[in-house]
Amino acid sequence: MLIELLTKRYPGMRAWLTQRLSALVMAIYSVFAVARFFIVQPDNYEAWVDFFQPLWWRIATLLFWTSLTIHAWLGIRDVFKDYVPNPSVRDVLQKVLVVSLCSYLIWAAWLLLA
Amino acid sequence: MQNSQHKNSQRAQLRPGQISRPKNLNLFTIKLPINALVSILHRATGCALFLILPVILLLLQFSLSSAQHFETVVTILHSPFIKLMLLGLAWVFFHHFFAGIRHLAMDVHWMTTLMKARYTSKVVLVLGAIATLLLAIRLWL
Image (cartoon, rainbow over all chains, first blue to last red):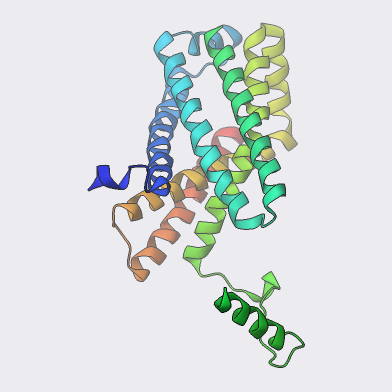
């Protein structure tokens, strides 16, 4: 039943589920990030760099940012669909959205992995 | 085809204000129920969070680049006005977080009756306020 709903006949269902799954990933990461921040308490430069040093943390952060990219794309796209009735204006806005989100993701990946 | 023509002619007939209907386009005449308020705030905070993304990346990059830059970021974040902005942004995040969890709960058919939805809306607003208050205490005391 779920598999059937997620096939190409119902693209809206897939977007819906993707929106929720990415939300879950971000919620879990956020709780961990806040907890880790208050446990480690990085209050100087060395501690702040160390905070982002572990590979597992950088991968988790990148996973968070990837989820954020997908989540924001679906969310803002829905906002445009609701409030921008002119299709050509909406098209331009959606392209701006995709370009900015992709560049943020590349920026974040470069920050975390370089 | 015929149907759409019929609809169009109907709309044209109504146009010069034969029946005066309330349009309710003035947003200040609409009183939002609490669950609608939480819902629209979820959307508004989501947009705000999207708009702040480049600033977050910029601050992260700058603070990680060198000890000197780190100190600069710390000084900026400690100025009273920026601290207040930070608290506002924190509320935006907390609201989106808690309201999002509420939506997820409703997606799995939990707390979906009107009374329960109103109750969880209040819970979301209170949790957002408490989290913001805790952060304010942490930032200023």
